[in-house]
Length: 200
Length: 200
DNA sequence: AACACCCACCTAAACTATTTAGGCAAATGC
DNA sequence: GCATTTGCCTAAATAGTTTAGGTGGGTGTT
Image (cartoon, rainbow over all chains, first blue to last red; front, side, top):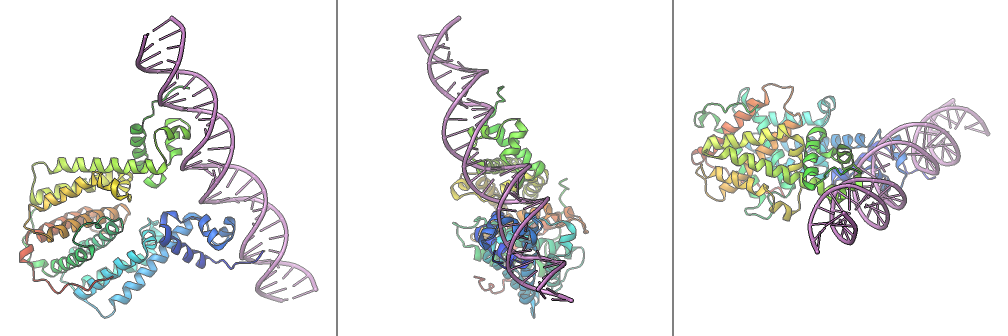
């Protein structure tokens, strides 16, 4: 009965690796137990449940992503900051698709509020301080950037842009360029037409 | 041994309803069998597997979405078309979150190529013909719109915009307004800065 | 009307994953 | 050197997926 030295920490890290290898939705306690050559029930000393594991992987991914983003933002502002931040986001998703999927897991509000996701969102807001926006436009812009980054990356991971020219890298650069121009030239854009009618 | 009248069609529709009620990831053959008061094994006459069911729900959702979008586009162009199309997309996701999640399922390339997803993408391209873009900008713009719509809607469904002002409806209108302005004023936007360095 | 055929639905069973209860033995602390 | 903790175990209940093979009700043919 050799002790393998399981800890919550090690299990979560191994779970994250498993997610990147086989996909987040195929992360199971059984697979994790096999990986440590241990019986499944043993994991319950360290994890409350299968859902607990998934949540912890999500929190790990959000931490890693926020850390990388913070590094990328150091000493940058405006367009440079936007591009660096977006690059980190996309690269992380491509390097760690399982972790990225985990990061998109729906967390209950308290957990989400205590996660590094908040830090990440604050960084987007910090980037926008390099542009000339006031509330509520700034909030709208935060949401736009979040939507574009997440939307692009998840469509790219789903294979939506493969097998057609131009390559997704070019579109990514184009989009960032256009977003930067839009935010910079905001006041000089054509006058707003009437708001679209509510959809609900 | 009363015959219930199972067909693939009915099972897929019921599966889609189930997805909207309990979430796409909780759609199981067991749950479906319970709904029809039938034994699980009986479903295998109509569905190849659990994965087969999920794929069929995804294809159904893509069809419905493309049909609705086509209706919305009839007789519209430019900004009106953009707003109507986007509204249909968002409304569908909100009315049918389970189906929407299904529509985002990763399909194998042949299945995807034969799905209504292609029709949907062609509609985005049709909308962009109302603006003054040439290739490859038009393709970039197709991808941008796809990313924004998907990204916004999935963040909204995940609860990302709740519990903070302004409401997500206002941001949605703002984003569409800005995208329209960006596409219209494309040639008059500030000159492009050098492309950002590749991230991979 | 009697027939046969089909197929819709069944039972049974193997396999995998989740979760809890309770036990033993190795590590830890006095 | 002993007691306590706890890491990992066995065992068992619940639940989903999938296949193999059986039975009977509905349909169509002559």
